[in-house]
Amino acid sequence: MAGKALIKNRRVCSTGHVFYKSSSCPVCPVCEKNRQPVTEFPSGLSSPARRALENAGLVSLLQLSKMSEADILKLHGMGPASIPKLRQALKKKRLTFSMQEKKY
Image (tube, rainbow, N blue to C red; front, side, top):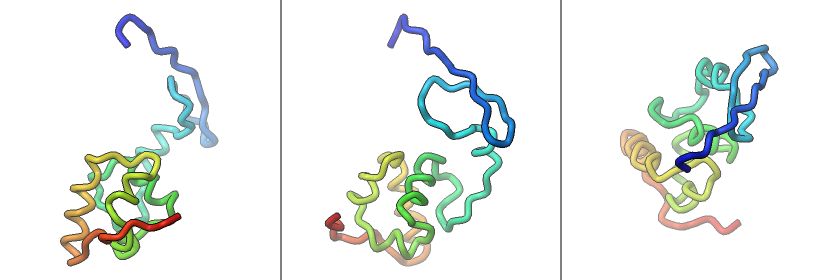
């Protein structure tokens, strides 16, 4: 992408924060930074990964333990760097990822 300048579009969120983004992602970085997670997931988990889990209806480690790593990696916003963090959080609760993939 060398030589190409990213064009950042000016946006205003519903709470009035002004921010600039080059992607189509509608998330306000100010609101996202101030948002308190309402899940059991580790605080070191990235915001896109946390949103991916929440959007899939997963808000607890017990729910997460019923999914396989492959299922989790299929979620939009989830990257491979998040799996070790989630695996460690599960381990602390004496849980593990499921060994079976869910059929959708």
